[in-house]
Image (cartoon, rainbow, N blue to C red; front, side, top):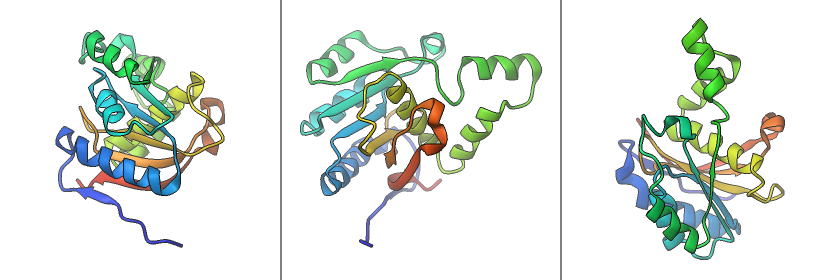
Length: 189
């Protein structure tokens, strides 16, 4: 078994985006991975990834569901267009782990729906872990990735990127076949 480096950040957040993308690029090259899925609300993280990793065959940027755009930052049409010119495909859809129906149940009746227990477990690693897995499932369900190959999944805490993983993808209806093969980068706290 080879020795693999994991880039740990002292603090989470967007200041780690470029280092996360560099670590992801390095590990993707070592493993021959040619597809990347990442959270990118405005499109900026996807654009930065496309500029840093032109060798990727597939880059999928996943935005928050449109129902969240009045709460958070919506996609920036100009940034998204620039990323698309570099080959990035975008998907916007219901969040697979903490989606609209899950939130509606929690607000109306209290408690946590079962799928949210899974999401909260991923949060124990980092917010980016949960979001990266969620984005990967959304991209898979949209038919935007090759399901027979591993994917580098990237997300962060709030904005930007601070978590990167190598993942065996799965569709939402086959969720328990998904495997996090290794962490590439993540915050410690």
